[in-house]
Structures are given as C-alpha cells and as structure tokens.
Length: 265
Image (tube, rainbow, N blue to C red; front, side, top):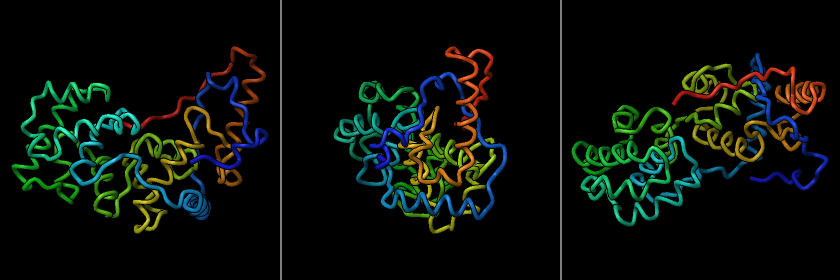
C-alpha cells in the first residue's frame, strides 16, 4: 500500500549512505497504551489487509504457504497457477512424480525439499483427513512442511480462526514499533497477542506485513512516510545512525553496524 506522502519528496528521509548500516531495534518496549495506539493507527491505514497469496480453497493455500518459505508471495503467485492446473486436488498431487513437480516449482527455491513436502502433505491429507485440510493447529503442524507460522496463516486466513503468524516482516515491524523484544517468532507472537484483542489477531498479522512491505522496509524504514512516526521509537534511532554515517564519511568508516535479528524458520 503506497502512502500518499510518498508523492512529497520532502517527506521521505534520505536513505542514501545508510545502505551499509543495519538499523538496530529499540532496546525497550513501548507502554501498552502506546502499543495499542500504534496498532489502531495501522488498522486505520490498512483496513482491507488480506494475504497476498492467491488461492481458491484451503488446499491451495496450504501448498502456497509451503512454497512461500524463504520466498516472495509474488514468486509463488507466478508458480501456483501452473501447479494447480496440473494438480488441482490433494489426490492428484499425492500421485505426482517428484521430478514433474520439481520442474514446475523450481523458481521457488529449495524446490526438492518443497516438492517432498507438498507431495507428502497431500498423501497425509488423503490418508488421515479424507482429502481435507484439517482445522486444528496440532493436525496442521503434523503435515510435512508446515510449522507454527504456516499453521497460523492457514488457520487465520482460510478458517478465520484467532491466530497470529510471525514472518520476517512481522518480526521486523513488531520490533521497530517497540511491541516486543522477543528473540524468536514465538516470543514475538506472545508479546503482540497480549496487546491485540483476540478477535483481531488474524487481521493484525496483515497490518504489520503490509506496513513492512510498503514503509517499514528492510534495511532502512521510510519513517518520514509512516503514520506511526510520532509515537514509534525507531525514528530517533534512524536519525542517530544518519548522523553517525555523516560524521564517518561516505565509506562509513568508524561506524559499527548493529545487526538486526531475523526470526528462525
């Protein structure tokens, strides 16, 4: 979602020269009141936020989510039409030859592992669930290629259950907003769901993802365009690093970058 502020060059903080730096996360969490205010602003900014993955049923979403690991949704969306045309049901995918599937999904990365996962998951759907995608976390996480994050996506998107998935965007944005100090996705999930009403968990996931894709980007956020700028703890950190970079010169000598943490898969 593109901010209208993006049309005003004065609103965008220059990121030139910051590319060699890693903007650190805030060291303290914001108060509950500030956290709720930040989330309310994001809810208003992204009122129609939905998954970017294209799917028409639970089986297709399951496969798309598995393919999206270490990959972009855009790339998955380019791949799945061919895959689903040839293998529209778990019954057909369960019987597929691995080399045929590998050829279709090669561009998604880790294609051999993902081929095994989606074929074996399809077999499990047929053997244990009558060809249907299960609705419970335990049953979903028992499927090949499906971890907690993937299960949360399926539960929240296709079954509209209260679940909050933490991907790379959510992990980064939640830290930058000061919602969490969590070192792994499970800790981030726990922190964020404590301040988001349960009925909004499945929506909050998409607010943070869209914000991360459009404004709170890696490695440098576009704080000048951010609707949460006034209360977010990250803009002062970015300003400080811009100052350090300027003092250090074009090559950034003397500035030691603080590495941002990435969620474990």
